[in-house]
Image 1 (cartoon, helix red, strand yellow):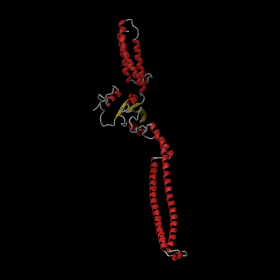
Image 2 (image 1 turned 135 degrees about the horizontal axis):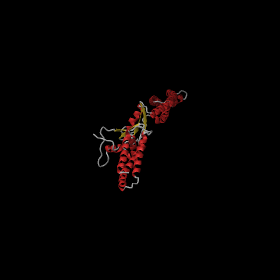
Image 3 (image 1 turned 90 degrees about the vertical axis):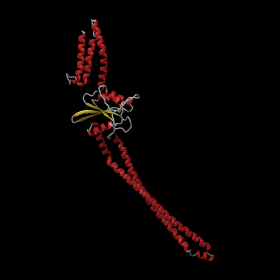
Length: 360
C-alpha cells in the first residue's frame, strides 16, 4: 500500500465522519447506531494501516500514521462510549442548569402542572382520589380549624364566666358566714350580761338573737345546697365544652394523619425546602405537548457540595440538546480568582469546549 493510498483512505474516513451529522436514517442504520459505524470505519482503517509492508519507507509512514490516528481513535472511542451512555436520540432534551437554590425545580414543577406531564397528572389524580376517600379537603380542614377556634373561644368564655360565678357564690357564703359570726358574738355577749332570772326565762323562750341565728344557719344550708347544684351545672357545662373541643381536635389530628398519605402525591415534592443541595440527582420528566415530545432535566445546583453531584451534573448537560442557565441573582455569572473557580469557569467546564459562555 502506497503512502498516497494511506492518506486517501484516512481522508475518506474523516470525510465520512464529518458527514454523519447531516445524514438521516439510511440502510437500516438508526441515528443512535451511527457512532458505532464511525468507530468501525476507523477500526478498519487502523487495521489496514497495520498491515505488513515490504517497503521500509511505506512501513515507516504507516507507523507514523498509526501513531497519529491511534490516540484520536482512543479519544473518539471514549467520547462515543460517553455518548452512548448519555445521548437522547428520540426525545429533544432540555436541562435546567444553574446555581444551587435558584429555582430550577420550581420552574420544572410549574411546567409539569401547566403542561400536564404524565406522572404529575397521575399524582394529582391519586391525590384527588385519596382526598375524596378520606373526606378531607382544604375547605374542610379550614372549616374544622375555624370550628376548633370557635369551640376554644366558647370554652374560654365559659371558664371565665364559671370562675366569676364561683367567686360570687363564695362571696355570698362568706357574707352569710359573717352574719352568723355577728349573731353568735351578740348572743354570747347577751348571755354574759343576763341575770340568773333572765337565763331561766330563756330556757323556755329563746331570745330573738338565737332564733335569728337558727334561721340564718338554715339559710346557709339551703344556700350551700343551691350553690353546690349550680357549681355542678357549671362543671357539667365546662366538661361538655371541653369534650366538644377535644372531639374536634381529635378529628383534626386524624385528618392531619391522613394528610401524610396524601403528601407523596402533592404538588411541589421536587421543590427544595430552602436547604442547600436538596436536589442530588438529575431527574428527567417526559412531555408530549401539541404532538411534540421533549424531556426536561432537573439538574443539581453547581454551587453546593459539587463533589457529591458532579457526575450527575455532567451526565445531564451531556444528554441535553439545550441548556437553560437558572440564577437567583440579578447579575451575570462571576469569574473566579486565585482562591478558586468562579461560576463562569464552572459553566465553561461543565458545558464543554464547544460552548461559548459570556459574562457582560
